[in-house]
Each structure stands twice: as C-alpha cells, then as structure tokens.
Amino acid sequence: MSDSHLNQEQNHPLYATDRDHIDRLLAKELPADADVVDLARLMLRYEGFPGASDLQADMVKTLKFWGLTREALNVRARQIWNQGFRPGQAAEESVGSGFDNADGERN
Image (cartoon, rainbow, N blue to C red; front, side, top):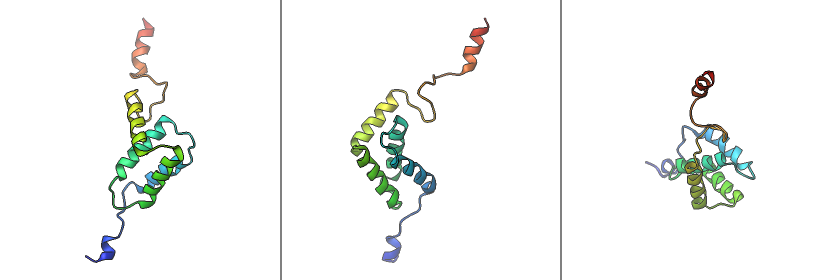
C-alpha cells in the first residue's frame, strides 16, 4: 500500500445523516436533554473512526460551545438516561399505551 492510500479517510455510511445532526447541534446555544444524548452517542460512534474528521472537529467545537468536557457530557448523558429519557419520547409521555386507559374508562 502506498502512503497516500493509508492517509485517506474512510467514509462512514451514516455521514450524511450525522452531518445534519451535528449542524443542528452546533446551532444550539442551550442544549436540551435529547441534544446532549445525541452528541454523546455521535462522539461514541466516531471515536477512533479513521475518517469524518470534519464531523469530529465540529463535535469538539460543539462541546466547547456548550462549555462541556467529554467527561461532563458523558456524565450528563448517563444522568438523562437514568431519569427515564428515551429517544423520540416527549418528556410528558408516560410509559404504556393509551389503550390500557381507554378500557378502564368504559367501566
């Protein structure tokens, strides 16, 4: 292999989607819980990945903009998960289905 081949960055299959997420996060001055979790998971996804250096640099830039270290981000993300956060679930949603409640109201 030539040196130029070794220095080439790999393409990540989720690059385009992740670019959109990171651009959105960069625009957030005060991140919501979902934003903190998103940045933490993206940083894990690209940790040690030999490519997407622009995404990795923007993730570090986002951390600095939010005034967080990587460790503080991970601690906060774990706290959010431990409080019951699940992706796509609004904060006011409860666990379970509305079907269960509908049955109880008829009696």
